[in-house]
Image (cartoon, rainbow, N blue to C red; front, top):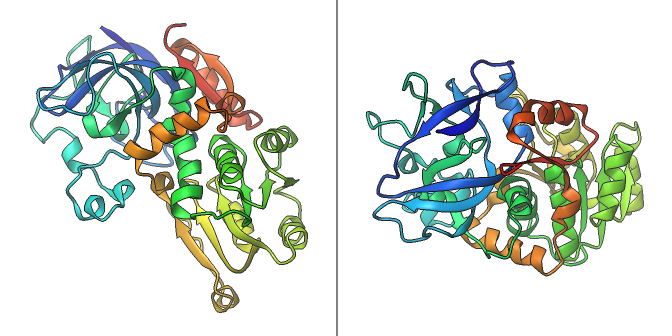
Length: 364
């Protein structure tokens, strides 16, 4: 039996229940989950902003230890420490073979229609949907081998967990999607887990000025700790003007890490001529973000960067080494560690918006 947090219906608290995890198929890996971060993306599914078949187990920002592997698995073995990643890749589609693994739809990493489900309810054997190929709010995960990567065993797994989404998204955006070069200016709108990781990565990349925009003073202070050189109140009427003034014309890169149209507008308005706005946040599906005619005439660009356009089998172990070398500050990103039984309280804390990441630690 495995304890897991199940989303039975939209808008309802997650319910802790017993589930049964199937044995690994040829390319699957069974992982004992050590830790899993609470991500705002999970909240979007819980609240129904993004649809998903239910019942399902959310959770995707996790780390753990491999218990069993399928007959064809070659990338990990039992006893390995691993981090999961929701951008599971097939390895042979057009996106994968052109180096855009984060865009892979991952169809081949799920079980074929008609195959037994990976997760069933212990009480009656009914299927539980696996969310985002992972379902990490569970003591055990059964996933495709291309949804996890082996990491240095010296890495603390509670810190490793947040690399799986927040840090990969934020750092990947700086290193992969934006390719920030030393001296360039960066503005980050939103200082939650993803925004803070973006700021930290911008510091590692050598950005000349890093401006953090957030309405909450505590988060702006945390951003300064993680590498921001300046902060502004994102809700101030002159927020964009302040950023343009302090950078003498605007920033080279403005990164939106909230998922709100107003935040995207602030990112675009903060750009210098030729600058690029990158949208990371999950906005309501009906929303649109755009550039004006004068923005286009000024050579400004707008892009999305799903999961930071990561190459996670390479990127994640590097980020682990950044932490072990003291470059990546994961300790400040984690606000609290809680047991699985307190997961709903963790999401209530998230809704308040005044703290960084909550992480479930499964041995509590």
